[in-house]
Every structure is written in C-alpha cells, then in structure tokens.
Length: 295
Ligand SMILES: [Zn+2]
Ligand SMILES: [Zn+2]
Image (tube, rainbow, N blue to C red; front, side):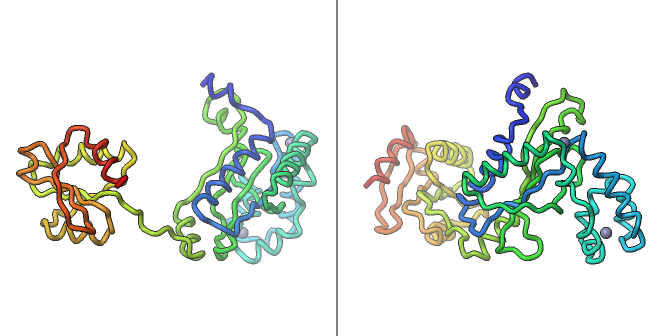
C-alpha cells in the first residue's frame, strides 16, 4: 500500500498519460478514427452544489422523465445524463451543466489537461453531458470513441478514481485509470478491414503417441519462452490430419515426436516446403532451431 501511495498524485499530467496510453494501445492494434470524449464531473466540494441545482431542474418537469430517471433522482441524479430514452435525452439537454459549477481546483485541473491534450495533438471533444455513474469518480471522466462504430461507439471509459481507495477502506489516495471491452476492439478492426492476418508460425508440433504428451508440453513452453511461435494439435488428429493442419497454418517447419524420436531423445524436423526431414537432438533444442530458421 505504501508503494502505491508513493505514486499517487492529483496531477493532471497523469490523466493525460492514462488517456494517451489508451489511444496508443488502440493505435498499436491498428484502430483508426478515434477521438476522446472528455468532461469533468467535479469533486466532493463542488459536485454537491451542482447536484442540488440539477435535482431542482429535473423536479420541475419530473413527469417528462422515465421511471428509472425518477428513481435516479434520489440516489444518483448524474446518471440521468446517461439515460438512453429519447424523451429523457431531450429534456436533459437543457439542464444546468457541471462545467459551470466546478470549483477553482477542478477548473484548473480541467484547463491544464485540455492544454496538454492540445499540445500532444490528441483529438478530443469536451462533452458536458458525459458522466460516469459511480461516486468514486472525481474530476476527469473520458471515453475513447470510434467513429467506425454505430450508436454504441465507446471503446473504453475511465477517469479519476480519487475516492475509490478510500471507499474500499484504504487510505485516501488519488488514482486514475480506465476499463475497456475487447469485443468492441474486434468489431472496429473488422469494420475498418484491419483485422490482423493469422500469425506466421515458426513451427507446428506433431505428437504421435500419448507417452510423448509431457515432453510435448515442455517443448511448447520452452520454445515459446525463447520467442518462437509454435502451435500443436488439440483435437487428437492422426498423423495425416496434423500434417494437414500444419499446411493450413502455413508453418515453415513441423516438429514430429513419435515412438522412435522419444527413444532416441530426438525430434524430426520437417521442412514443409521442400519436404526434407532431419533429426534434431532435444538437447539445446531452442539454439538448434534458431540456426535452422536463419537458413
Ligand atoms: Zn471541485
Ligand atoms: Zn430516463
């Protein structure tokens, strides 16, 4: 806990780093057309005043809001901004906005964050209707939006969790972060035509006898640790079926373990293009295979 507190800070530079980390992560995966939707929802000092004004506003037209929003008014009025019902969305557009109620500290925090995003040329839009329903959020809230998605266009959501650790029973410690869903990433990659091609595998491991199972698992682990990409059969296919699978995966080499190989402490290495086979000792396997791949 002490080491966590050591890194804990209210500096908006950390908000910036977390937002740019999320953007960089998506860019590395090949996602395009991203932007940041950004807001500040204030702190324990300035938010209560805003909540009062918001509650008064909603109460004036309470019958225009849905049942869920009417209940939200008592325990979490900010969530009304999140309501997906058309009528509620229409009414809330005229509501007072939290950005007009920020205290000096929150206002300065938001101003600095926006400035840094501009400096780094990170595409963002202030969305004064963006909220996160949970009470542990403070100041910054953000979503990363993909214009390749339809109405459900948010890839991840996050912000400052300044009240979270204390609410969980820890010491008061500011924090910032985000949560993301991997399914939306896959959707965007497919829509943008950037879904990665299957890996170019180095090896396919063909296991011919049950007794070689333990050795097979050791080989897989050892070669993966040495940065080789290697796959094997998990459907108990016969020899022919496993060779076919290796062909389908377009591997350069197959590694074969059968009864003979197990006895000799060797593997058979089959070049899938030329069909040439040779024996490779199990000892220093990774090093021997490195040499083979270089050829
Ligand atoms: Zn504040
Ligand atoms: Zn509603």
